[in-house]
Image (cartoon, rainbow, N blue to C red; front, side):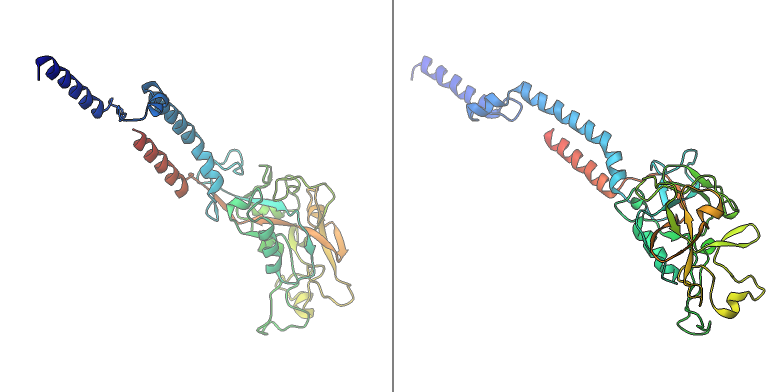
Length: 316
């Protein structure tokens, strides 16, 4: 072999070793020409830039995504939730009040039936459903049928709205309108604004009738059925019925029940407008107290962030 041929072969071998080593981006000369043409160095740099851009967009959107998919713990609400009234901050508590969009009869004498109804009305899929809260009907009921002894195992106690829909904090509509400052303000005969927003955030037309079964009992305090026991042995203690309450079975009264009306602020109208016999009407409902908390990321969001990180690491 002459010197010229030897040098030519050496140059060829060096070139082969360099191409086998690749170009520094994992692309060797053995790679098909079409792939190399589609993935030049500038294209790879552009792909990394695009990945950074996408990760940035995802990071910006994750907080809102997390809040949308993560239900609050019952009895709590993150400070970033739009249902938190203006002026409240972490550590404060409040309650929501609605008038249901759905209706039912007032024939049941058992308060649990109405609590179940309003909680179901405010369930997942509504503007307040993500709270997972328990709701209580602003309603007064008859309890067990007339003549049922209080010692009977089947006896069901009557209920007063003021004791069922317990108010222990400021009360607001879902749109942020304040209804009452506290328990006293809620039941003193007037409220700050009409209760006219349903569980979907829709305004209910003024003049819409609502089952309440409630009226004034003690001086200046509303939210009781008629003849509610006051410690003096009222008529309900001896006859076994409470006038005009839901499920009222008082003989001779034809089961007329107290109704309220939306668009009103005096207790004589929003709670006790008059009486109605039968039919399906809406109900007012108060949520359990909601404590404003610091928002926490959902587990799914943490998982999503991890996936983005892994994708970026592999691209590097």
